[in-house]
Amino acid sequence: MANHTDPKDNKILKLEKENERIKKELTKFAQDKYGLFWFDVPEGFDDDVENKLPILKEVPKLAINSKDGKPTHLLIEGDNYHALTCLNYTHKGKIDIIYIDPPYNTGSDGFKYRDKRVLDKYPDGTEVPIDHPLRHSYWLSFMRKRLELAKDILKDSGLIFISIDDNELAQLKLLCDEIFYEKNFVNHIVWKKTNSPKFQSFGLGNQHESVFVYAKNKSKLKLNQIYKPFDEISLKPYSYTDNKGKFRLIELEAQGLQNSINRKKFSFKDRNAAWLYSLETLKEWDKNGLIYKTKNGRFAKKQYLDNMEGVLIADIWIDKEINPLQGSSKEYENFETQKPISLLKRIIKLSSQKNSIVLDFFAGSGTTGQAVMELNKEDEGERQFILITNNDEVVNGEKHKIMTDVCYPRIKKCLNENKKSVKYYKTAFVGKNSILDADDRDKIELAHNAGAMLAIAENTLNEIEKNDYSQLFENEQQYTAVYFKEDFDKFGKFVEKVKSLKKPVSVYAFSWEKEFEFDDFNDNKNITVKTIPQPILEIYKQIYNLA
Image (cartoon, rainbow, N blue to C red; front, side, top):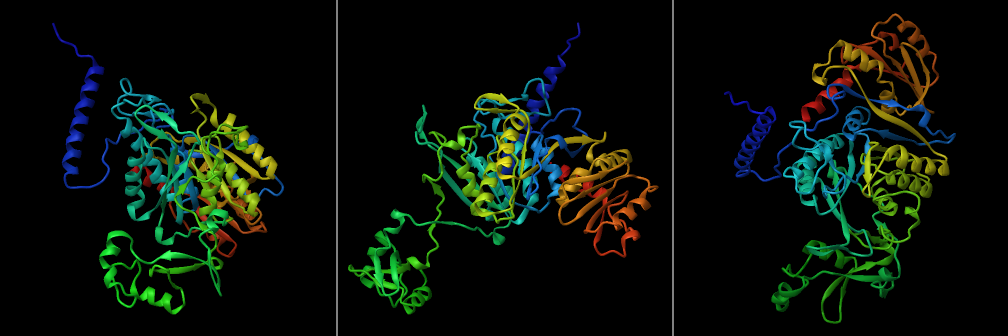
C-alpha cells in the first residue's frame, strides 16, 4: 500500500530545513562580521492587495475645513507600510521630524505579523506570543522595512525619535545603527513613565521607557530650544560673584587617582595629564579672566549666569514637566493614550522649526497631532502633522477602530478648538500586476487615480475641479493641474485652462515615458511640467527592490 504524506507536513518539513540552512549561513557569516542577524521573514498582506499598486484616496466627508486653516494636516488610514510607500513619492526628503511609538513586542501588546511563507502553522496576522521561536525575527522584519521607508522621506537635516522598552531595546539600537548608520546616532533618552514602579517578578520594579534619536545626516543636524528656564534648584550653583556678575565653577582638573598621582607636579603653565582641556584652551580662558583658583588650590572655570540661555536639557527626563501616565493629569481624561502630550511636545519643540512637517506612522490615538497643535498655539507656529494608523488596533487589551473611533474624534475636537483644518485619506490599490511587472493597463489605472497623491506632493490639497480627463487643486499660492487621460483628444482644452490660471501651476501630464517635453507650456515661466505615472512607478520599484 502506498504511503501518502500529508502536504502540510511536507511544507513544515521544508520550512524547518530552510530555517536550519539559513541558521548555518548566518553562523558562518557572523564569524567574520559584526552586526545584527536574524531570520528575515517575508511579510504577507491581504491577497487582493498583494500584487497591486498603492495609492492614497481622499475621503472628502471626513475633511475638516477652517477659513484660516493653515496648515492643513493629514490623516491617513491604512497599513503604514503601504502609506509610507506612497509618502516616498509625495514626501521624499521633505519630512523634518518623525516620532513613532511602535509595538514593543511584549507578547501581549497586540503586535501582529503575517508570515508569508507558511500560514497553517505560524501566525497568520494573529498576535505573536512571547514564547514564539520567531518572535524577534518577526518584529525586526516588520520594523526594518518601515524604517528604511522612513529614512528616505526624512530631510537631510531631519530626525527620527523612536519610543521603546527593554523587550526590543538592544535589537532596535543595532537595527537603527544599520539603517541610519552608527555615526548618525544622536542620543538615548530615558524618561520616567510612572510615579509607581511596575512590579516585575524577575527583578527590580520598572519605572522608565526609552526614546532613541537618530539623524538622517548628523553633520546637518541643528537642535533648537535645548535649554529650559532656570529654576530655584538650578540657580543654586551660581553662588559666586565678581564685577561681571554671578558665576558657577566648572571643573578643569581630573578627579581621583589620576589627579593624586600628578598633584606634586601640578602646574598651570605645563600640560599635565590632570587637565581636562587642552593647554591652548586653558591659556585662552586664562587670558580672558575665566580661570578661578579655589581656596584649596584647585583651578576651575567661571561660567557666568548672564551668558547662559538656561539649563541644558539632559537625556534623563524625570522632571515633573513630563507627566507620568499614572495620576489625574487632564491630558488623559478624554482619550486613551500611551504617551503623555508633554513628552511629545518636548520632543517636537526640541527638534522643530515653526513650519516643520511632523510624521507619526504609528499614530494610535493621535497624541502627536494634539502635541503639534498645542505647540502651534503656544508659539504661533505652522507645523503640519501627518498621522498614519490602521483602523484595527488593541489599546490596553481592548480592540478598537483606532482611527475612526479614537484618533479622528480626538483630532477633530482639537482642530475645532484651534480653528485648523485636516484632510482624511485611505490607502487603496490599483492595477493587477506587481510593481515590477506593471503593464500599460496598470499604468493607465495608476494615472487615473493618482490625483490625491499629486495634490499632497504639491501641498495643494483643495480639489476645485474634476472631469473625465483632468483634475485641478489649489492652495493660496499655487495650483496643481493633472491631465490623467492616456489619449490627448482633450489636451488642447486642458492647456487653455491651465494658461488662464492666475497663480503658478504645477502640471502633471500623462506620458508613457519618465520625462517628456510638452512644448505647449514653453512660453510660460509660471508653469512647470512633470509626467505621470512613470515617476511614481520608479519610486515603487526602488522600494520593491529594498523590500
